[in-house]
Amino acid sequence: MEHKELMRLACEAREKAYAPYSHFAVGAALLTKDGKVYTGCNIENAAYSPTNCAERTAFFKAVSEGEREFAAIAVTGGPAGKAPAEKCTPCGVCRQVMAEFCGDDFLILLGNAETLTIHSLGDLLPHSFSL
Ligand code: THU
Image (cartoon, rainbow, N blue to C red; front, side, top):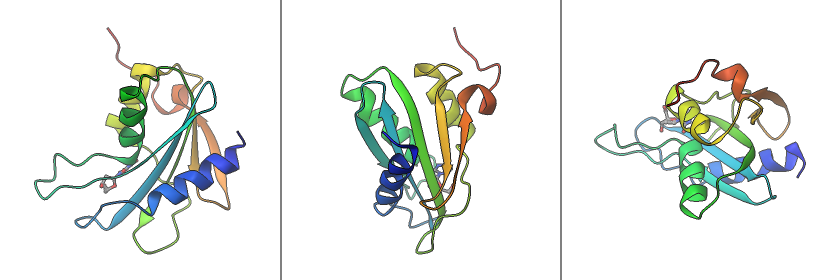
């Protein structure tokens, strides 16, 4: 799948964001190595800490369906109701979740439908923790 198409799916997923507290809407689209896509949005909570980021929503959906092999994730985010920002970088917790299932060569596409930059998990989370 084209990187741009994966980002387009992340933008679509962002429209489902549930973010009544931060008003910051994020979407993600996770591509498996065999070409399937699982999307996710951030889901906030009045108690704050149960909030789930868009990236983890996508990962948990995919892993709970039996997926284990991932090629790339597209992430887009910004203030709700506005066009997504140029870059919304995954938080540390999401990077660690990615590292649970992906190697340093896993691709992380950041941006919006117009422009995107390509990063690797190894770049964004060097020396990640593992057992
Ligand atoms: N958020 C994500 O969904 N992904 C990120 O990469 C960064 C932050 C969410 C969490 C919270 O709902 C809102 O954005 C503001 O932090």
